[in-house]
Length: 269
Ligand code: DGL
Image 1 (cartoon, rainbow, N blue to C red):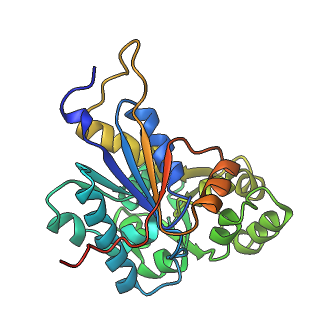
Image 2 (cartoon, rainbow, N blue to C red):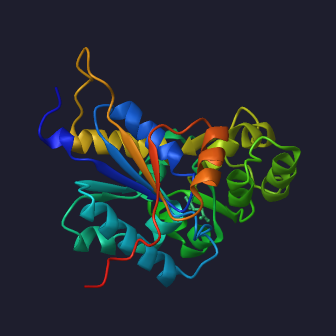
């Protein structure tokens, strides 16, 4: 039996399918919850768009999720987290979490040498969101934007030869870091390829698990009672529903209804 609080869905959003890595981690930590997932596939990628524009998207989507009954929102996108937090969290009446802070915390725990790398979209890397936080914790930082990675994932090419070539292109010149933060929620889907390039001795941090643990610790989670089903997921996509289903399926499946929405902006009265 779900508690009253658990009947409220948690909202999760990303520019596309990348945030499904976060959704998966959340469902593992809080299985009884219902989730509303927004994949803003009509406007992907966010990573090359101006910060103000991405911030505006984050506001619109958070409002959309609140209108659908979300009691908390996880920004499952580093670019949108870097662009809109902490302002969005300060001004919204519900808890809002991003993925940058949990990733930084996880890297701080893992590094032994104090030399950490972070890869992300151009928007995330140019914002300095990771670099500033890591340096404030006394670490040395190497940062690299990998703009083409998101396209590979959205095209279902995460395990391809092209992915391997690009991973070498972006990572071969790295200094001797001992920890690498995947500062984009699309990148865990490239983890096998990235692992082959950086080798087994480099710790890889994906903020998906870290943010899911933080949400569970804040909201609390009951196990699923015997005879009860896990919570359900509804996906709202701004682009083509069939191609979202196809890509999501290629990267490990998508449960739940997929609803195409024409606009996330509030209806004008
Ligand atoms: N997955 C997103 C992130 O974590 C955004 C990728 C994009 O749309 O460029 O930054």
